[in-house]
Length: 390
Ligand SMILES: [Zn+2]
Image (cartoon, rainbow, N blue to C red; front, top):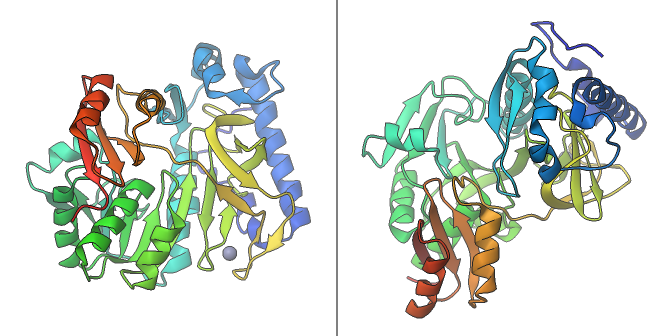
C-alpha cells in the first residue's frame, strides 16, 4: 500500500454515499476500512500485529512506533494534538490535503448546505477560545474578524467571525455575550453543549427575549436535546445542528434538518462495542486511527433505516459529556478528584483553556465545599456558577 501522493487527491468515491442504499454503503465502508487497515499495518509498526481495539493509552505509549514510519516517508502533514478530554493527550499527524477537504467540505460546509440556501455572513464563535485568539482581542470583549482561519468560520471563506474573548461560563460573560448577540444579526452560532446549557439557564433565569441566530451549530461535545428544543420552541433560534468530526479517531456525525443523527459513513466508520465508540478514519494516512477507542461512548444500531432527508442511517446516540480546552489539567483527573468529594448538586465541570475550572451547580455551593474543591487543584482558577441564580 503506497502513500497517496497525488496533489489533487479528493476522496470523491464517497460523495453521495449515504443516499445510495445499505448494500452499497456497507460494501464501500468495508472496502475503505480494509484499505486503511492494510495501509496502517504496512506503514506503522504499532499496528503491525495488532488486531484488537486500539486504545488511547496504547497509542500514546507507543507513539514513536506509530509515527516513525510516516516520518521516514514523504508527506504533506502537520502535527496536531488530541484534546486530552477523554484521557491521555498525545501528538499525531494530519495530512492537510485530506484535512481541508474532509473537515471543511464534508463536515462544516455539509452542515451549511443542509440548513442554508445562501452563504451565511456572520458567525458567532461561542465556545472555549484558544489562547492566541484571546490575545488578538486586545482587551476588546468581542472582536469581529474577516478572513479568519476556516476552523473558526464553519469552513467558509470571507465571512465575518465574531469572537468573544473569554471562555468562563460566568454571569458577567453570559450577560455580555447575550448583549452582543442581541445587537447583531448572527447566521450561525458555533458552540458546545456546556456553553449552550449555560446560555439556556441564563435566559430562563433572566427572562431575556431576543433572537440568537438562524442556526445553532453544536460541536466538540454532547449537547442536551432539551436545551436545543427549548431554544427552537421559543424562537431564540430557527434551527439547530449537532455534529462532530473527530480527527483523533472519534465520532463523525451530523443531524439533518429532520433532526436525525447521521453517522458520516462516507468519511469514517464508527461502530459500538460494549457501548464504546470504536472509529476507523478512512483518510488520515499521516497517523492512522484504525479500530480505535478514544474514550467516548455511544449507542449504534446494526440496521440501516431511511430518513426523510433521503440518507440511509444506522440509529446513533452520542452519550459522552466531555470538557474541552484543558491544558495542564486533565479533565478526567478533575472529574475524579472533585467527584470523590461527593458534593451535592454539581451539574457539570468545565475546564477552560488557561487552567480555569468552572463548576456549574443547581444550587449555590457552600463556602466550605468551595474551599474543598479549590484544594484539589491549587494551580487552577475556580469559578462557581449557580444555574438557578438570578
Ligand atoms: Zn436525515
